[in-house]
Amino acid sequence: MLTIKQITDNTEAVIKGLEKKHFKNAQEAISQVLAFNDKRKSTQAVLDANLAEANQLSKSIGMLMKAGNKEEAETAKARVAELKEANKALQAEMDQAANDMQAVLYTIPNIPYDEVPEGLTAEENVVVKTGGMETELPKDALPHWELAKKYDLIDFDLGVKITGAGFPVYKGKGAQLQRALINFFLEEARKSGYTEIMPPTVVNEASGYGTGQLPDKEGQMYHCQLDNLYLIPTAEVPVTNIYRDVILDEKQLPIKNCAYTQCFRREAGSYGKDVRGLNRLHEFSKVEIVRIDTPEHSKESHKEMLAHVEGLLQKLELPYRILHLCGGDMSFTAATCYDFEVYSEAQKRWLEVSSVSNFDTYQANRLKCRYRTAEKKTELCHTLNGSALALPRIVAALLENNQTPEGIRIPKALVPYCGFEIID
Image (spheres, rainbow, N blue to C red):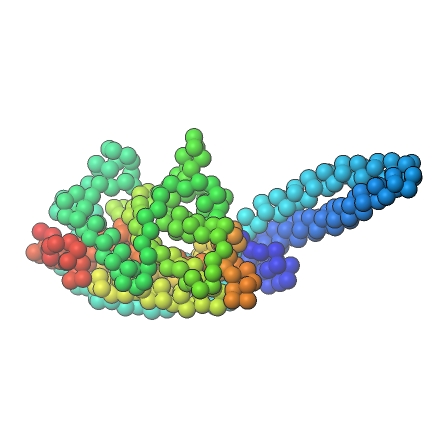
């Protein structure tokens, strides 16, 4: 969340940034935060004055008793008792103002960097680069859901029987391809200096608040209500929360972690052709890369993460493009974000496979994730993460773009992990 210092020192700039993100209640929300903060500070001032007075009176009582001024001592005692009662009410009032302020802060998104493009919808995102290999398919090319059926790779109907729509069952070489991609992505991350983490896929409420998934305004998380636990929508949540309430040493930064997990998203409101096959699932596999860094180095880290994801797509021989998301299409927590999309030749459309984001101090402030500088000052870290990569649409593009009359060709980089060169 935004810090009080950000809001009080640069109120107009914060409101302008929130408007760039098309946050409708920017002026009202910031005014509420400032009002609650003023209330908290003014109450604190009265409380501090009362405590100082009570402390001074307490010291005087003994001296007054020694001097035989019993009546004055009793008056001082009565005043101390009166102040104590008043302070209880003041403390409760101050705590309430702080809690109210926190509740409003949780509803305010991060402000975008200056370089983030203006815009409201995905149509206004800016394509900054295209690359990869062009694909020419036979005239009778099939979409991946038909290829999956033809080669017995994925059973969507069986998933519906066992669980429901959006929970496919991978079989035979389909399951092997899935596992090969996971191992390939993890190995590439290891080569790039990331430490592998195997976290839980269920988290508590504090973890959800820490990375900004809670409060869940869009109802996208699966909630285990009996235990008040949440199924993770991404490994970002448990991996970043490793550093909740932690003070790191500057020499430890940047920290680079990666994790493979299953991910769960309700995808409420999704329907139509965009959800066919693997295009949009409720449960899917993903490898995530996460960094904790200093403010001075985080933009360089972001560039390195973008290069890493681009390298994966190049090795998979897929046509891709990179988009800089406009203010209105960015996530609630991101300060800047780039999406990677691969082209599905059979579907004639681009499929998003990765988002790589820098959150500045927004998550770190929620998490209380800090580092100690060489000068022994404590500062908030910057947090970053990205998909490297999400599997469903990668599998869709691999199946569709590599179909031949002989079968589905496996990219060279993936063959050692699959153990086969073609699906036939």
